[in-house]
Image 1: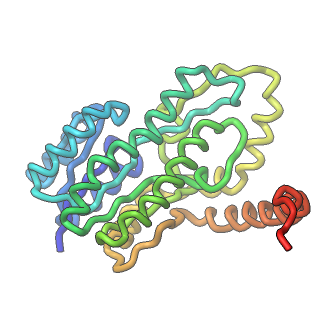
Image 2: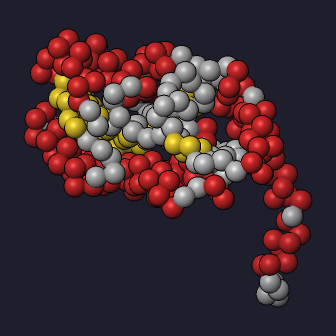
Length: 277
């Protein structure tokens, strides 16, 4: 069965790879980008199966119009991928209000508005799969990425609730949590706060903490086949790591959390108050 995709942020990175993978197997894609000229080669290669839409995901009205256009053009939507986003680097103290708001507007409110726009369509057709591109940074947190983590933890939270809300309507939700990949996530597309020298040591320790994420980057092209397997699954997962480092990092993170909660459980019990006899 061929599918109709709606993918944000298709000019490069995962969005580009996944759009191309879907098109090459015969699916159709509504591909959004801030500059649709980056999609001209895909349009030339795949003709009417690609609908290029100009979109900045911080524009709520633009999102609603793009979803409406895609649905009218193809007649349905089967896979919706919230991929557009970027990394904002900087200590919490270093961030400006503008930098903080732009990060949340793009990485959290962007996917939220796309999701709200597509849910009525998917619910009515009683089928569909929403792919939310999160990150290992939606599971754990490193210094110098506080607002990025806030955006991805927010995405994780509302998407888990969404999954429970839509299950009875046949609509599935999956959080894809990539580790380190050789995309432009930390390159030209990243935001960087003005650095304060007092945090230089913290920045250095952050690089050490990232460890395998930096030294074992994944190949973005390999994720094309993986995303197709995910959307073809009869029972797709709520969460899935992309890359070889996610599971080992998550195991370490959750072991530390449980140890911390157990160590301080005496205080949790005290906070409960007196038990009724």
